[in-house]
Length: 339
Ligand SMILES: NC(=O)c1ccc[n+]([C@@H]2O[C@H](COP(=O)([O-])OP(=O)(O)OC[C@H]3O[C@@H](n4cnc5c(N)ncnc54)[C@H](O)[C@@H]3O)[C@@H](O)[C@H]2O)c1
Image (cartoon, rainbow, N blue to C red; front, side, top):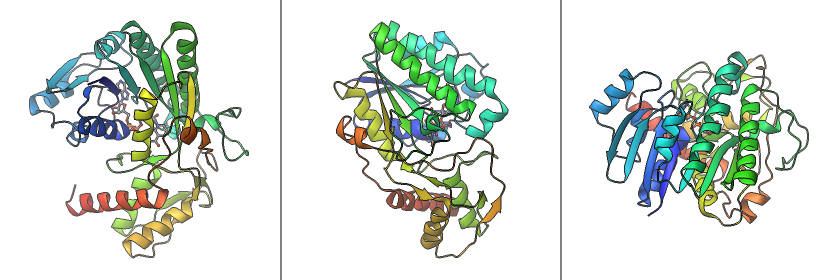
């Protein structure tokens, strides 16, 4: 069996990747500092982390390493800003699936330095460590935000980036570092530009909560979902299982080293449409409330996924409405259980 390192494996997307790798019987190393990742996310894909580990990890200083292994899963509490942690995590690994990052566009407007440190320096640390440890492939979680404020649709990987946030800059820099390692140092890299990912386990924990879990919770609570702008802004929303599929394909698909791929459904839905679907699932008719537009938000995303299907062989399995229904039911169950 191959050995995969999933950074950010306790996070939303990372934990879904871990779950699928576990189901396939692969060897897995998780590197996460539990900044936004949660130990309970791993219960779905690995054995639940024992209490002693949770307590030790929670009490550890920022660059302390705390390791737990059972069967074919190892979890390291460590920080990608720490090169030593990256080398430890990359040891003996075949494929690196690098999800660990700070992920909020609006938060990056308030705190760009942290985004530089984690998303750029951290990615560079990990690329160096992966190369030093002889990894076969490095898959990087990039973002549709690199397209920025464009009016050219559908967005193609070759488009000129018109970034408007520090988060987007950190992701584009990560992509270029991947390319530099691919061209100069013989490390095969693949960058995946995720378009608004959603699904079960997505966090809903602060003022920067992302739109789908936020709106589902509003509808379940009988509250008006808050829309920044007029609601006509649209997104090419991607169900998380499609993103897992793209990652696993990007690790092993031949002849894609150095490439960049959009990961999306290939069509956009407006935020008003999202509210309509959720009302349909819930059997409600709750109107949204409209707030001023936020800095750093783009008006539309809509991916060209020709390359994803043709070269990576990873066309999406779930369309937006199918994924949304699964996600809605998951939150409804969680809500009913009072969690
Ligand atoms: N969710 C989306 O819509 C979306 C869209 C585009 C790109 N992405 C990218 O996908 C990846 C995963 O995003 P997510 O939505 O699962 O977010 P998430 O916050 O749930 O996961 C990120 C994980 O990285 C970990 N992490 C953060 N800083 C770290 C550090 N210094 N060292 C080690 N681990 C650290 C967090 O604890 C968390 O577990 C990120 O790289 C994000 O930028 C996400």
